[in-house]
Image (cartoon, rainbow, N blue to C red):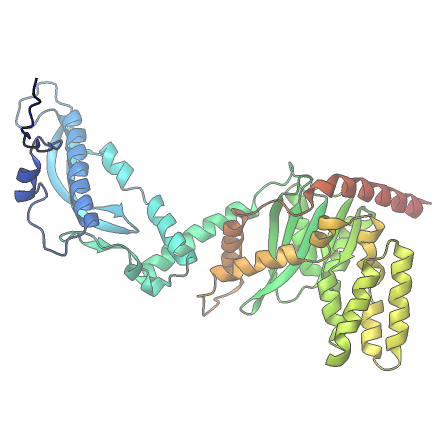
Amino acid sequence: MKKNRTKSSPRKPVFASGRSASTRESTPPWGPLSPRARLLEVVLAQGFDGVMGLLEEDREALCGPARRWQAERQAYRHGHDEGRLVLGGRTVKIPKPRVRSLEGEELDLPTWRHFAEEDPLHDRVVRQILAGVSTRKYEDSLEAVPEGLAPGATSSSSVSRRLVAVTQRRMDEFLSRRLDDLDLPVILIDGSSFGEHLIVIALGIDTLGHKHVLGVVEGTTESEEVCKSLLRSLIERGLAVERARLFVLDGGKGIRKAVRTTFGAWALVHRCHIHKLRNVVEHLPKHRRAWIRAAIRKAWASATVTEGRKKLRHLADQLASDHPGAASSLLEGLDETLTLIQLGVGGALHRTLSSTNPIENLIGRTKSVSRNVKRWRGGGMAVRWAITGLVEAEKKFRRIRGHRELPQLVAALEAVVTVDRKEQVA
């Protein structure tokens, strides 16, 4: 039996509309468009047709079919009005179907109420600004809309108002967050300038190694009173005072005094090694800085506090005659640079907690958010921008390096603090 080798003509694909490909090519369902029309414009045009269809369905559900007598009618059609819906980071004008009750009261259409919600617009504004778009160039950063739709809410002033409203709400929510459920054996505190304003930030680390931004306060310096204000706000929001805790600080005396005054014997202070090294070598000529850094790091790597203290004091004696400023800086707060040795912290956790780098990195990411701000209008604006950056950075937090050694740190903290408190009572 011979095979039939006659080739049948290929069938034309049929689209959902029921038309074949050739028919679709000749008469596209979206009508005549310019050669520069893009896919987005077509999709948006078709999407708005769908929205108008949903609005008509809502109106029919309230008023019944058009042009038919309804004996039990509860509402009636009342033409169209100009309305605005949110689309791609802007608002656009479209005809809004109107419905009134028999008593003459305007009724809302559920679909309109849903699509007119401005939260997506607020979120888009914040995302664009945080991505580095200035308020003046906001409109240029958005996708084009189909012809015939009048865009709005894209001017610099409109974007600024929305940004202020959103960041103010985020700031209020941030400053009222409760801390009762957080067990924080480690807290880092540092400050950074935003324009002419100084923002002091507290970052906590829980027993599992997760980081939490605890609070911020605005001031002109890292004074004791400014830092006390920050710590008081944390306590009012639920931070436990009677808990053995390690504070990692830079060389600011105001922060240290505030911690000692507020937490007393419950707090151990570790001085940031990077800040201490920087302070010491600034008093030295460049040709002596490398070996002094190496000598200090070697002392900080000692097995015991006694050994480390001995090496640092010996180095200070060597520097005293030629560089008294460096020697004095090295001796200032010497024991607090050895706190991690006292607690037996080593390895990756030692590298993490030996400096304020975790909070310095956080501040760097926060400042990148506000890089386009050219004029700071008061401390409130600085706090809003700082908290906005902190909230965004918090979304990308990961557990700290060395988090597996945290149980040993917690046990050592409790043992040392218990001994210190007993000595104070005695």
